[in-house]
Structure formats: C-alpha cells, structure tokens
Length: 172
Image (tube, rainbow, N blue to C red; front, side, top):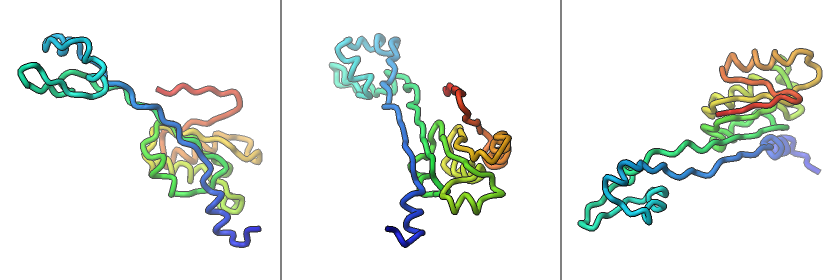
C-alpha cells in the first residue's frame, strides 16, 4: 500500500500515449533529375535523402533534386491525468493533443484531489507544448453544458475542440 500520497500522484498523473507517423520520403523533382540525366536506379536513394555523384565527380545535393515531403503527423492522448508539465517535452509541437478536462477551474481543488485536470490546465499544457490543436474530453457529468470547457480553455489556448459521443474529427 502506498502511504506517500505525493509519490502516488506522481505515478498516476501521466497516463497517455504519443502516436507519430513515420517520416515520409522526399518527393522527386523530376525536372531536375532529368536535367542531370540521372538513371532511374538512383531514384530510391534520392527519395531517402542521398546526394548524387555524377560521373565527372560533381556532387548534386539532395535539396537540388527533391522537394520536402509532407510533414509527418502526431497525436497525443492524455486522459485520467492531473496537471503535469513533465509531459510537455514529450508532446511538444504535436498536431493534435487530446487532454482530459474533468473539471472547470472553479473546482481545481477537486481536480487535484481526484488526480484529474481542469480545462484551463489542459489549455496551459497545450500552449506550453506548442501543439496545433487541443481536443478536450472526459468531462464530469456535474456539468450540463460542456461548452463551458471550451470557453475556459480558449482563454489560454485558442484552437480548442470538444470531444463528445459520436463526434468525428478530421485533421489536416
């Protein structure tokens, strides 16, 4: 049995996952590749970032032969968790952060004692981690209007959406 409540909270406060797409291949600039008369056998090497050395010893930098790939996407899921800034470096610059927000800031004490978060705390994490989009969920049933969570979070972080039963999101 844990008797150290602070240690117990630290163990419990960071429940989450980070999902990241693999880095994508660079896109061939066909016009440039053909201009240098590069054999198709080297296309794979170029797509993976390799420079090309021509027969005369000239090195063609990869940046001259390719375009940047579409950025890989990332999604962080943090639920049943209290406010914990140690997650910030892990989720930094994430495309979408789902963060539980069981309570409004008026009940921050209750959030701490039950090891949950407020909308304001979730928004603070999102802002400090420089995420693109914050998705809130896991609301206490004591609130009849979940729009209050979005309003509270938006005072700290503007890009806030509310998760709700059956709602589907598409992120670019």
